[in-house]
Amino acid sequence: MELLINFNEFWARLKQDIAAARQSVFVQTFAFEGDTVGQKLSEAIRSSPAKDKRILADSFTRFVLSDRFRYSPANLFDKQLKDEAKETTAMMSRLQAAGVAIRFTNAYRPTPRGLLGRNHKKLIVIDDAAAYVGGINFSEHNAAWHDMMLRIEDAGVVRFLRNDFLDTWKGRDRIGGEQSDGLEILTANGRNNRTVFQRVLDLIDTARESVFIESPYISFPFYERLREATRRGIRVTVITPEQNNWRFFRDYARLESARSGIDLRLFKGRMSHLKAMLIDNECLIAGSSNFDYLSYRVHQELIAIITAPELIADFRERVMIPDLANAVSVECNASAFGQRWLSWQTKLIDVAVTALT
Image (cartoon, helix red, strand yellow):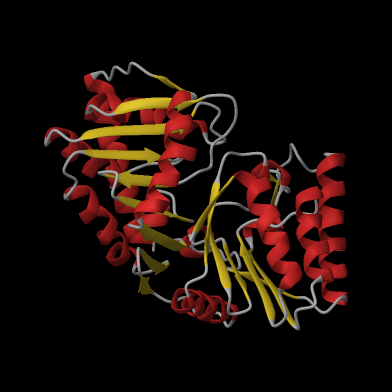
């Protein structure tokens, strides 16, 4: 296993694997845009000698480019956005002309699940040799964010992830898991996610000393478990970006940290899209999933639970320690009104999503 921090490190490794592939290159991404980053992937796959080349993207990317909804009134006449949409269409056509198969998951439908339920996985499988999981999408703005991918060479895990890709290709979302030495991979199918995430919640509940989380989007039920952990005397530290592309989550983190006794730090300088939880410096949780309600309930996700000491040491050295140094501690105060507002808001969201999905 190998941690790849930020896009350039990830891309340098992936480009080599794509060029060396002989049997297949399978890429699953949440966003795939026709900008310079998307074009890099497109060119690498078209040039690959692999016989079977496929790309899966969520339907989200057909409607949202550069983090902007293409069909909102404010964006309808945005020339830059329209040009990117045209180039994305042209890029897809070039890929298909070169024999690369492309499919989109989770078509939007006028139902609550049809709108909310996204396939949020980021997964790449090269031959039967290597697989990547993590948080990086193929778009310029995402590539500029702080993020992380995990490269895996274990044969059993690679086979499991290859089969997961092929099942998704056929329109079958599955729930399951695979273990190897120092690694457990879990898949969430968007319908029975709570069963999968119970494993994560149990790890928080059994923490003995510390929980470190870096994530842009954190919500209930994870905050409830973190609050209980602080009451047990566990040191809980959260890093979330100051420049969050969803500002609500930054403000939510301030209020939740104040009422829960969490040590909140704001990551400075740029957006951090990295999703990781380190428990007692012994167990690292990473993958495509956010620690939020939509991942917990309705998104298809991949979760990696890592216990390999050398990988955890690498995460501490190259992610946790430098990111803490680049984050500012925040003093948070929560009024009684704010606490009640947050409590009622989370309950209403829970009731609404449960009823609608």
